[in-house]
Length: 281
Ligand SMILES: [Fe+2]
Picture 1 (cartoon, protein in one colour):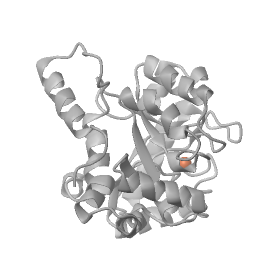
Picture 2 (tube, protein in one colour):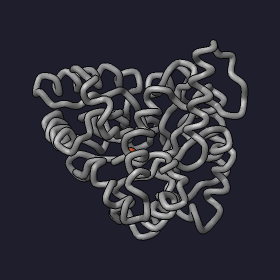
Picture 3 (cartoon, helix red, strand yellow):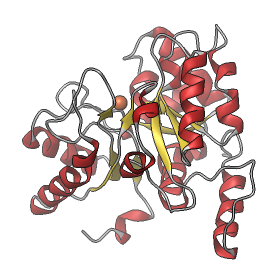
């Protein structure tokens, strides 16, 4: 697929259960293609597919994700659906301990000096064990996008955000769900999501779409973010510029000098500037 014409002006969804037949997302290819067509119609032309990884509820085989993603891309191209997908995964809380660096790399994104993975919070609340698991991912050489922190019970009322502070200081960023902003994951998640947006602590919005059961696309998050108090420029950052930046430039560690070549160092410095807490807008 020719990407260039979509790359500059597209919404980019970095959390999406589009891969058919692997978890509680799309049950089959037809459902995945139907959702993908909806995404393209909504101006979402680039996405990572992020099946649950390490979850006790699903048997996702990490080593199969790349080929399954390629098969989905071939089906998208065959059907003329303007969507480019990249292999990814959503790491179950605590599961990173059991994943090798090679397995993490299968579901990671960004250039080699700034690879990052998506890790979901425990719904019961951010605890010390989760903070330790984030440190484990970091120690294996990967940056972290923390998926839907607003869904962790007590994030803003019981010290959850404070327990994420070491990871955030280490360069992790927060991803808020469009469906949380829409109120579909309960009032506490909605309130926390809106406050993360207003406080400019969220770096990106993603759909966390589950074709067949959660049919909204990333585009639905934009009016919801505006309603939460974001400026229109901030919304563009959250759904377009920032996720695009993460795919292209990655998520470098911000507190430790990296042994990079000159070009890579410039990238890292540019990334650090862009990745300071909050978004400009
Ligand atoms: Fe998810």
